[in-house]
Length: 489
Image 1: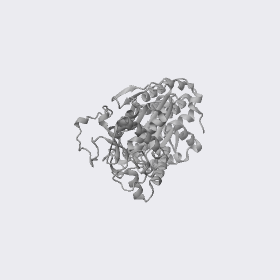
Image 2: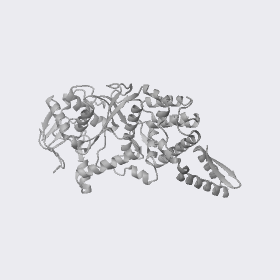
Image 3: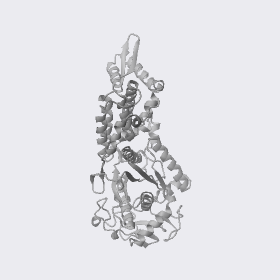
Image 4: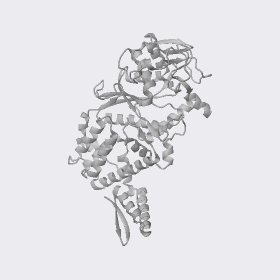
């Protein structure tokens, strides 16, 4: 069954255009009412992947956060220009210009060129985000295709007096930028000069950073370009400033990324961008998501042993099970991951789909309801307006299904909520109508058989638990002398 659009049949939900968002702005450390620079339009830049390896599931948390943000704004009527970079050159394993070149190291380990590595893992990244129902950005920009833009921006920074040349590299002088470190609340007078490992002796200050390399510790650097400072390659931070300004302008609304970007990468972006343009603030709202953590701490590729989305699929999970799991935690809170918690999310998502299918069985297609569902939509909107609180939003969806009216309007409300949550509920319910979802039916029959075996063995605890679990998923069992049949609530 293909359902008509919830908005096409239910004008009730058009009022969401008056939604007033508040976001926790890292610049200021407080929730602030969102007011875009241009009415009805939002410029948004989200830090993208460094494509030297597969994205791990911790990385994917950031992109689900970005997706919820974009979906919420678009549902509220905003025209969103979402720009994301692909880092395919010049990212060292430490943000402070130290460590190995991730791209070169990966290419050497795999016996391929840097660009071959970048292309392979870029495709792998988008395969993962597609499977997680993450909307693709309006603009995807590769660093290697914007070298000229970076050089032009560095020239502006140099012209304004914020640079010095030493040891073959061009550095940004943070002492010329008095507000350096405000985003990260850095106290530079309390920082020790030798605090960073492998200190670059050419730096006047340990927090200075490279804008352009012509001399690095890597021999035969794979990708180099001609520049006013010699043949070389850009520092990592400059790409985000150059590409965001190219596609969003010299001031834009929202910049997002992981909290690990705050102390160095985003701090340096602000300094070089505002040094070039003389305009402050460069970005109005900074949104940062917390880490996904496991027993041994945050997930990291450099530490090894990280989990990919394919790992979860191989363990029998659907990518949307993981999306559901992520929605259960607020993006600004650390989220503890385990296979057991993911199994819980899988069970909950399955139960959610069962309940929506049961509602669809009763009411048919989504359409105008009697208005009772509006209070759930209002509560859902309030949750999303309040710094994108997906746990509360999920709770309102469940509340509608458990306590709300069984009307075509309620079904339309469910699908409208999913325009933000992105769980593919309309597709899942439509697909499930075919032959009563043979896979689902086989699972229920298997549980009924297991219950019958438990009863035969006089294990009534197990039998009762199976009945209760099925009831929570919207399945009622009816026993008779001819056996047990099941039906949806």
